Amino acid sequence: MSAFFRRTRVRLSLAYGGALSAVAILLAVGFWLGYARLEMARVDDSLASQAQSLLSGLDNQGGSVSFQGGDTLPGETSQGIAIRAVLLDSSGHVVDRSGSGVNDRAMVSAAAAALAKEPGTAQSQTVSGVRERVLAQRVDLGTAGKGTLVLARPINELEASLAVAGLL
Image (tube, one colour):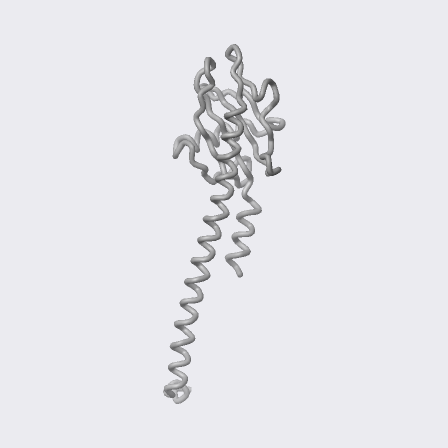
């Protein structure tokens, strides 16, 4: 076997094969990192645009805050992407929500965690056993004081597709 590796042609083939493999691995890792960053940025952009849409629709009348004159907060974006939204007052009580409010307590704790790190920046968290991208923004509720708008979007499917892309 050692005579086999003494040949120049074999050693050059192994060296070129190793170099080509290293370059291919580096390119694949770079592609995966770029794809992951692009997809997370897309999720963050959808959360930020939904936050702006919700903030523009908030009405403050006599210390009572509502969304567009009485509607509850919408549970999806204009593109049909499901997003949970909770509006909290300064003491952490729920003022308005999208959906049934089953996980309000989890959303309040997610808001506290997000605000403690970096307010206004989306972060990945596990909320009620589901991986979600959470955005918490401070809002001015007019005469009702300050509050927090919390938006969450599930990212389980995104993380699964990133795992599959990583395996390929």
